[in-house]
Length: 316
View: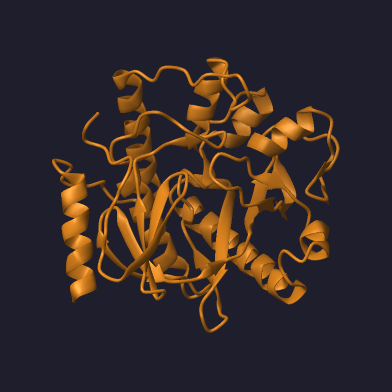
């Protein structure tokens, strides 16, 4: 799969540093702008898979860009420009060290905890008598601490965040307010496309002048889980799995192949055929969530294309 980008080593003018996350690589330009490159790396259970997924970075970047534009009237964000299909340029921000996870339905991690008998998640009670994928009476915010690469994000309660001084109370109230507003808008956008936004996470940062803004990605298949609205209730009534568009299908495949990111486990072999199906699922999600036809960018030399486009933007 040479038509993917899994690592970059650019040296842009006035570059101060580069941070490599699980999926994105962020170049600091003159302590003023950040050039964020969405690679084709695939991460699951906080482990980066050995092979890239064609067009995944472009899909994530373009969904996030569209969703930032669709929510900027509610919540300010860091975005300035998108000079390349895989690249977003934005204001340098100091990220908050928590991810704001919000759940409208009891799925994924919440369902796994519930099955294990837990009725509290991040200090938030979950009602008795729920089935997997049932809707919560109200969306719940279940924050996670932001892990360094290779570590696992950890659940944390609002009380612990404030007690440990990770975020000040005044700032945290803003994060909660922004999280609820974004989730409401995201749910409305999803509903208009015949989808249910099940759960998602948001990341926030502070600009140099102290303004709290949305950063990173929003409402992408990597940060969110979607169900198809059609047939949702019938499937719940019959106790069937929901038809979903998210990275969960990769997680389920890994679990079925005895991998959950635990010590001593080996990542199963992903054949080219399987990788193609993953890429197709990502394209399907893009088209479902945005309502636009996905236009594949030229991948004959992705590194060269990105470098040319970013340099063109920075030099302008």
